Image 1: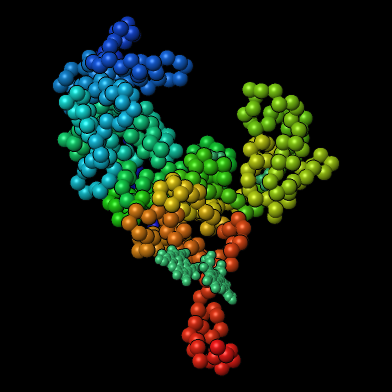
Image 2: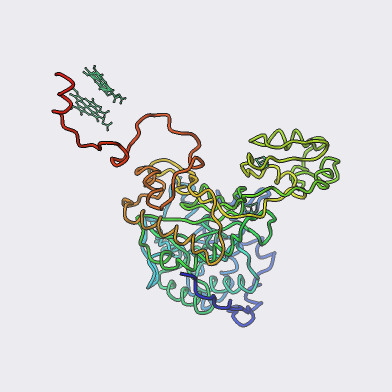
Length: 472
Ligand code: HEM
Ligand code: HEM
Ligand code: SF4
Ligand code: SF4
């Protein structure tokens, strides 16, 4: 079933939505900031204001000062939230231990996830962070924003939260860091009614999908990662908001094997763009690279003298399958033996391009170590065409979920289920025949299971028949 036509995107105008005036937003001077001290002594954190990298401590203090000078009735949460957060963090530095209580279950009606509840275990010392819940907000694909959107979001968060954010959480969400339980529903209402924005995922559900920058700004993208990410996010909203799975499940979309969103390591179902036909070669540009007229790797190694570009040393001899050659100054690629590793394209982006018959490889089962050890995703669908509305993909996804939702044990990731059941059972469940590309090497042990129907005579044998030929 195809996704219903999309609603037109709501155009947000900060001037119409703003909560704070310019004066309220620029309510302190550089001089005040220099002399500003937060409520608590934070000697260890102060050390982290030194050095060249942008300091989270300096940023947080600036926010603390801003809140201090804002009228108390212009915020729905404690104006000392940032001070107390830094105070508690200093205490954790002193103790070498966290000061958040275990767990926390909060949320908004209608949804089973999206908000991570948190309570301080020293609330009498740091009352402004007694509640300090995190809200996951679904980010736009590839995280392109306009300032109207971000400023509106910032105003909302200043008003109803701590003013602190994480841009972005590792899964992709915008993270609103720290508010009280009472503010959750009002924030959700403002997000949906005003900002036209939904929560992201948390819990045993489909988490917020994310994608590389894709066709928006990358010449190597083999499919529209953003469109696919958006479409599947919309289509599976129910699975995202209301946990129905044995455990968490993540989608990530990489436009090519370079893996800029690390789907192979950080998603249960990893989509990686690739092509089936030939690498497109512009021989003139190849010559220009060899002549030194174009800098290799888009200039990525300019910071050091690596000598003159040597196409044999840097490309041909580094090709993992040794399928490239140079004949009379013409670059040849034996595409049948190319594994689409991207190396040559990465080195000579102006001369080489992915082919035109593009699609995705689909890999399953990546996860972090707990319980059974870390896994990267394993190749299961070597190639699939992907075009909106992605019906073939949705069909596959639903077969995978049906299998895992039925067979998966409590808190068992898909990767562990595949390990427990074996790849053949997984392939059977999703209706994909086994292929040599699915393994790096054939098994070395001989513990091979056979299906009874594949063995002449089956498993039912009578010992008497055996004894007729073999004496005891
Ligand atoms: C003619 C005599 C025997 C034959 C042909 C025989 C054959 C086998 C075979 C084919 C295996 C399976 C190997 C594997 O799957 O890795 C095995 C395993 C084993 N056998 Fe025997 N066996 C004999 C006698 C014995 C005796 C007398 C004992 C003990 C008193 C014994 C103890 C074991 C054990 C413990 C294993 C399991 C080893 C493991 O799991 O690593 N076997 N044997
Ligand atoms: C309290 C006594 C015993 C305990 C706790 C015990 C425990 C085990 C365990 C945990 C395994 C491995 C199972 C697996 O790999 O899934 C095993 C395998 C085995 N045991 Fe025992 N065992 C005991 C006694 C015996 C005795 C007395 C014999 C033989 C006389 C024996 C023969 C074997 C054999 C042949 C295997 C290998 C089976 C296979 O590889 O499929 N065991 N045992
Ligand atoms: S994964 Fe590939 S297509 Fe996506 S941004 Fe990175 S290089 Fe470009
Ligand atoms: S993409 Fe990789 S395998 Fe293919 S020709 Fe280039 S370097 Fe060789």
